[in-house]
Image 1 (cartoon, rainbow, N blue to C red):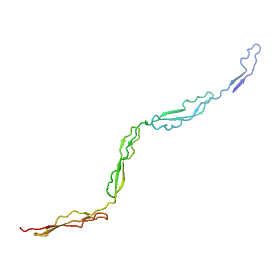
Image 2 (image 1 turned 135 degrees about the vertical axis):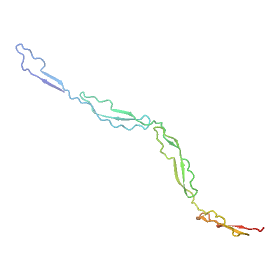
Image 3 (image 1 turned 30 degrees about the vertical axis):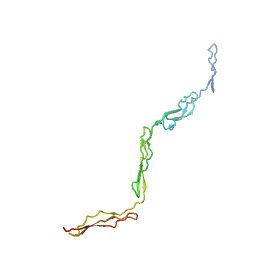
Image 4 (image 1 turned 60 degrees about the horizontal axis):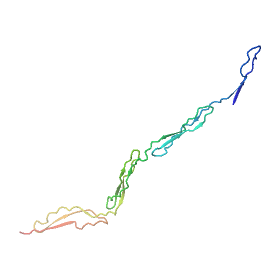
Length: 202
């Protein structure tokens, strides 16, 4: 684009006067206003591209207006990278062994409990995952139904002899402590003990 201007003689030279100098018409190229480059804001940082080792994250921005007519140029850094703080890939996590066999039931009849264990093989290294595992378990175990046998209290002391001379008797008794159930051993019939004493004449 161009623009022009012109001028006219207001008073031509006469009678030896100095002539008019310079052009009567001028043109020049138009210079539009400069437009600077415009870029967007940076995006948020991306997720790290891997969970261990030399991981990186990036962010970027875009040109929304290119420069014109001698405006300010666009920046050269439209993408940025940064290192992520992640553990090395060879870091050891916590490890536990396999379960041992279940232990014996706590009772020989009826319901009881049994347990099993496992051990920690190695603790985590810095940056590794810690131990969040159970190392012991318990469960209910069942055995045949318990039966209750007859149970006696201890014998009482012997009584005095029934006679002071000749053949007499001493007795002692005991009481049933608990009765048997339908599957238990029955009580013996003896609830009283007897012993004889014979005195011989000298």
